Length: 190
Ligand code: AMP
Image 1 (cartoon, rainbow, N blue to C red):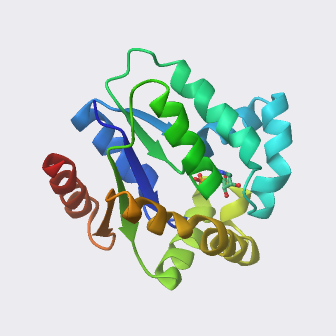
Image 2: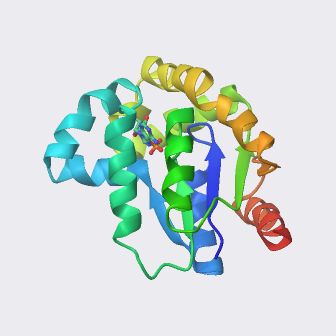
């Protein structure tokens, strides 16, 4: 069983790559952003709670996000492994995930990071915002806020996973197929 964290800044291509990798390696894809958006669309209590944070480009509070993620893992007891996309995004989330998986005699196998420069990614997100319908993709100020959240709260995870010898950076610039190939090379080396 392998559990992969797909890591990267907003717009790095995590969701796009996850779509290919989940089928190729028979992994359950869990995107916390997608789960939040599903809840917002269906106007659930969780969606209402998350909405103001997401629309401002702020992270949703840890306790809400961690509980949601654990519930999703629990809904997939027969999974052959998970592909975590957009989670963890804080040290507290990473620690909670380690404890949660350890309780199931599991662990994170690898954290694979898609790397790209901020300016390329901001332009990519603004372009995506024209069609994605995502409020947080449409306003440059909100996008910049997401990068600030990333730099302050998420970037420290690189050291967290490096210290566990689980951090694998990959060049995130190239065609979708090229990047899938780079990620596959890492996964097959695990
Ligand atoms: P994403 O689709 O991964 O870009 O996530 C969209 C938004 O959902 C983020 O900007 C956050 O507001 C929220 N979100 C997603 N994942 C998390 C997480 N692990 N922790 C806190 N907030 C999250």
